[in-house]
Amino acid sequence: MSLSNTYASSEEAEQHRKSCTPASNGTTLRAAERYNSRMQRKVFWLTFGVLGLIADVALPLWWALAATIPIGAASWWIAYRSEWF
Image 1 (cartoon, rainbow, N blue to C red):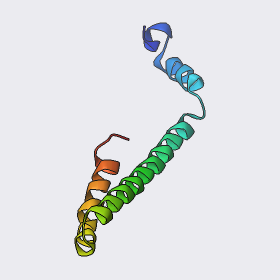
Image 2: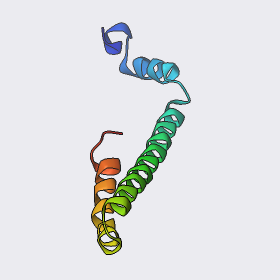
Image 3: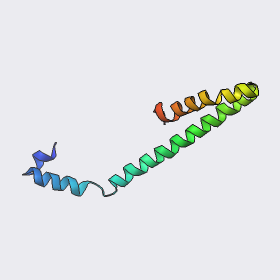
Image 4: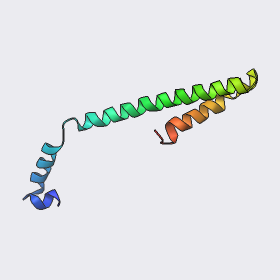
């Protein structure tokens, strides 16, 4: 059932919709974005650190240093582009 069928005019329906919408709706969206941003940052640094430690243990020094760029790219993709978090 739509609001336009319940109310006499679309203006009444709009006023009712505005009164039913919680005031914190924008705040809730911003909080979700802030949470998502913090979670992505945590995931990035966690994957970067774990993969970097694995590279340090498994590879010689210069190879581990050279592997830092692909590790950073993979961590960035996992945290920001994969949409897993």
